[in-house]
Structure formats: C-alpha cells, structure tokens
Length: 101
Image (cartoon, rainbow, N blue to C red):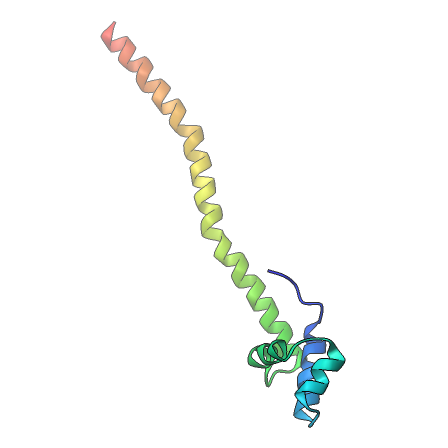
C-alpha cells in the first residue's frame, strides 16, 4: 500500500480547518489534494486528535503483523516437513530392503 505524503498531524490539521469554517475546496487547493481524498480522511480520522490517530496507526500495523503469523507458521511447518519426510522415506526403504532380502 502506498504511503501518504501527509502525516496524521497534517491530515487532522486539514480536518480542523474545515471544522473551523474554511471551505473544503479551499483547504484541498491549499493542501494539494482532491475533495475525495479529504472525505476519505474525514471518514477515517474525523473527530480524532493526534494521539488517537497515532494509536490507530499503531494498531493497524500490529494487526498486519498478527495477520502474517499464520502464514509464517505454515511456511515453517512446510519447511520442517520437507526436512523430516525425506529421512522417513529413506528409513522405510532401507527397512523394506532388509525385510525383502
């Protein structure tokens, strides 16, 4: 996902300007972003202060990290299985050769 060129502090500052009565078009023009971006930010950060937005960002990054854990576990188990299985197959073949011979 692409990172924003604006920090949470700047985004909340833009939202506060509109709350203070500055028209949305003017804030968007001064900031160099579209109306759609402003409304997307308002949906995400509306009513927040800077510490709240920082906490949301931290929680999102932790959630992303936790969502990767099952994939990591599956990869580790597959790697362990690929290391163990060939040894078991070789052991079975050598036992079968001993019994047959």
